[in-house]
Length: 173
Length: 209
Image (cartoon, rainbow over all chains, first blue to last red; front, top):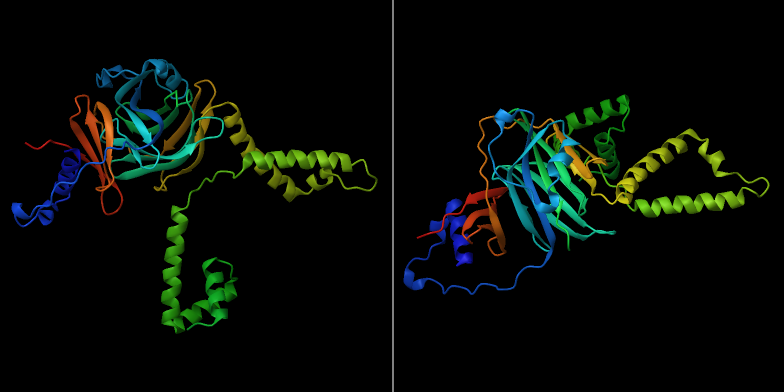
């Protein structure tokens, strides 16, 4: 069902569903069985879009909170960015697939593409990251991401502050 | 079919290696040969495009190996320096070009080595396609974080409403080259597909029926 749903969504969105439909239901091919094998992963990353500001009135009112093992996120952000308030707008915990691209999508507008390049010497992961704003890639970077050492990406300005993308490698892999 | 000397001139023209007189002569040759001119202009466009898309920052390859080899070489030089008439590495370092090159490599190596030694994340290379965007990275010891700062980005509209999700898990469909993001109740929320230009399209997933 998942496979069929995805195909239908994509074809419909791209406006080519009609061209792919069979001439009659009687000629429709039998549904293919879904692969049950889960793709291999190299770890998990937590990504969040954070609004940094000094203007309390401009906060969105989001109630999102950081994971327990990153409870000091706000104070750490405050040591880099000249703001006092850091509000998580959206967050996403994502597997990093070994052979396929992964998407960290805390919001529909600003998101990250993650490609694993394998474990790094001394721990952590080698990653190729692409930071996207809608259909425009803002930056591409090769990074060694280590647990306990988040990556802060200073993004575009918004309202009375700035948007920051936070990426953390989850411990335990 | 062009002769090799003409090809050579074309490459030198593309690389900006000609002096003014040579450029004038080559321009005259292009004016007399429309095919050569068309080829030169096409290659110039390709060259410009390539340069525009090459990363500005590149990682120092094998930095640890390079540093260790410098240290080995220094140790060898110290032993040899006790031999009469031998030129020490300090003599070589008095050469201005060598000093500058050594300093540049050492600084680049130290930056990578320091970030690695501190156990923090490291930004190896960055590339911002928009030339107006400046990407710079640094490690903040105080924050215990690595920072990739993007300056020159276009502001987000102040009235922008962000669409967020609570994603529980993700599935890839390799046949359709899509990724489906599922919510807390295993409901499909979003499908990430790519268009003909290999750019992501985030499509809201609405179950049928």
